[in-house]
Every structure is written in structure tokens, then in C-alpha cells.
Length: 254
Ligand SMILES: Nc1ncnc2c1ncn2[C@@H]1O[C@H](COP(=O)(O)OP(=O)(O)OP(=O)(O)O)[C@@H](O)[C@H]1O
Ligand SMILES: [Mg+2]
Image (cartoon, rainbow, N blue to C red; front, side, top):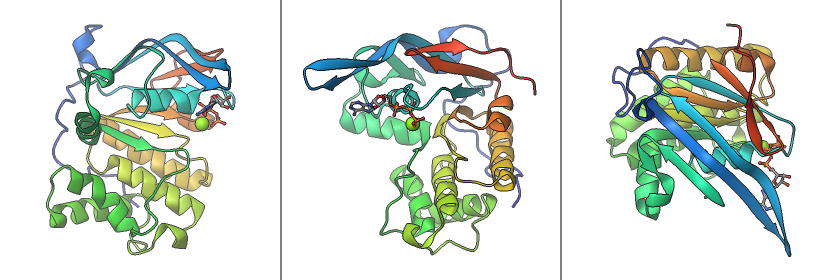
């Protein structure tokens, strides 16, 4: 497994974090006054309450919080997979709420990589096909998509599992396929829901190195939900989700 530069093109929309100010234009991701209530029978379950978060180009943010605090709910809103009850979420200059279904899917394909907590790989497709798919949807040729997918799968240590279907892979291998799939298009921002939860410390370290390399070389921003203190400590900032609000933790020691 190596962590050298995977691709030679910076993604569209990922400007340099260097010299970025607090100007709104420097953010790849902004959630403003976001709330999310779930309807439970006759009552409402408030999960997120009027909370804010902003991530600059090239910034790495760890989100921590106890089980049930709303971390997955938050990532779904940031990735435009769900809509807030109140507030707005902007990614690379576009509000999710202002985009129709197909424009949203296109914007997500161009700008966002997503590692779901439960992977969501397509069972009928091989590891290679699962990872190549976002590139194909984005308009890459089959040869280019396959080459990128193979390269990424090699980097997560699965170069010898390209033709395996998800059911033929271990839990940690499936998790790594999902990580490769999120990274394959070199998106502006990658949202990860406990990406190393099924991995041993050595393999988790390889994945962390890969994320840090992509962050440095391609200026990709990361929002990582994690219970792993080693991962959280390597992000630029940590926020804790408590009582529906994001609370900044002390600056991470890197
Ligand atoms: N579709 C839904 N309908 C009703 N309640 C929901 C729904 N999805 C999540 N919840 C509730 O919202 C709360 C937050 O859920 P969420 O999945 O965001 O938590 P989490 O912080 O990701 O937890 P974990 O660390 O266990 O993954 C939980 O109490 C959950 O039961
Ligand atoms: Mg969750």
C-alpha cells in the first residue's frame, strides 16, 4: 500500500486553503442555523438544534459525539441526502435546497465523496465496478474510470480483490471499498461516517495516511465522524455534537 500522489488534477472548486480568510467564498461547506426534527408518531424528536458549521477548502474536521447524538443525521444534511427542518446547507457555493433532484445528484457527484456508516455498496457489482461507478456517472470513459478505481483500490490495500463482490469481502474490506469509492473522483469535500470502525489499527493508519496525503496534494476537505482518537487528533479541528449543537473542542495537537 502506498500513499503517493494518486491523481494529477486538482478538483474543480477546490481552491487553496492558503491565505483563505473568513470570507464565505473560501468555504467548501457551510451549515447555517440548521435544525432537524424527526416526526415520531404525534411528536417531534429534535436531533439538531439551530447549529452551525463551516469547513474551508483543504480543512479537516473531526465530528465526535455519543451514539444517537445526531452525527449521521448531520452528515446526511451536509451531503444533501436529507433536508433540514430549518436552516441552509451550502456546498461549493450552491445551497442543496435550491437544487432539484437531478441537479443535486450531479452536484454531489462533482463535489462530494460520501462514506456511509453501513457502506451501501452495490451487491451485484465487483469492488472495481463499485469504485469506478462515480467516475462513469461523472462522464469519465470506462478505461479511465477503471484505471482510477484500480489505483485507489490498490492504495487501500485491495489490489488483489478487484473482482470480489461485496458479499465475498470481509467487513473491513467492504469499508475500504467504500472509502475508495468516496475518493475516486477527487471531490472537493469527503464526508466520512466512522470510516475506520471495522479496521485494525495498522490498516486504519494506512487509510489515515491516504486521507492526509490527498488532503495535502489535492486540497480535499474532510469531515470525519469518528470514535477513534488517533484519527480525530490528526484533523485540524474537532467538534463535539452535544444536545443537538456542535461545540468546538480545543485545537488538535498534530
Ligand atoms: N428516520 C428517523 N426517524 C426517527 N428518528 C430517527 C431517524 N433517524 C435517526 N433517528 C434518531 O435520531 C437520533 C440521531 O441518530 P443518528 O443516526 O444521527 O445518530 P448517530 O450520532 O449517528 O449515532 P451512532 O453513533 O450510533 O451512529 C437517534 O436517537 C435516532 O434514533
Ligand atoms: Mg451514526
